[in-house]
Image 1 (cartoon, helix red, strand yellow):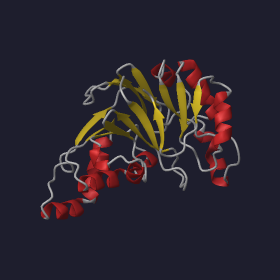
Image 2: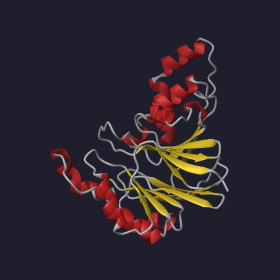
Image 3: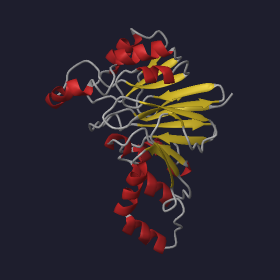
Length: 273
């Protein structure tokens, strides 16, 4: 059986939070780590988790919102500076432009480092794989099956299903409840599910956009329903706003789903197999 785990590097949201970094997960399969999303602070979170940033050769973006991508420049340049010589990034249409904009922004920095004798491998030759339709990845450099489904969000956003040996891991990314995530997550050993719309006190700014957020995100109750309908073994709730109360989130999801419910802290390791 494969040694598989998911490290919850960042369980937060776009809103600054000292306790929860922006969204990112590390899918660890034996001695290989695949990074899924790269919010602000991700590189430091990897180091805290004792995962060398330069060891990561694959990064997947579920979508291109700032809270899922803001840490990419540091990951790209920092990992290269630490010795990474190859990198492949996978994401929806627009990922290539995003990556090239980062290169342009820091072109003088990169040129200077190369002038000192550092190889451009791992920075100038990053492989970008874009897709714009759900289903199996049309180009898949990973040694296991990867399937995507389109989520309901305000930019093109995709959930990912990873089938590794006999284990299935699903990352929902940002979405409101929909049939696609239920179908994609069917029978999964682990579902990492967006569940940020927790009950409780809200800031004035949050109250103003709460109705809109309900069209693009899930509550813990809805996450529990999705987990139940998909018949997953365990569900991990994530994407919490600073006001979130983890105990209430756990209770609300558990009221709908009788399997294991996890409300993680940042850096928590979830074993899969």
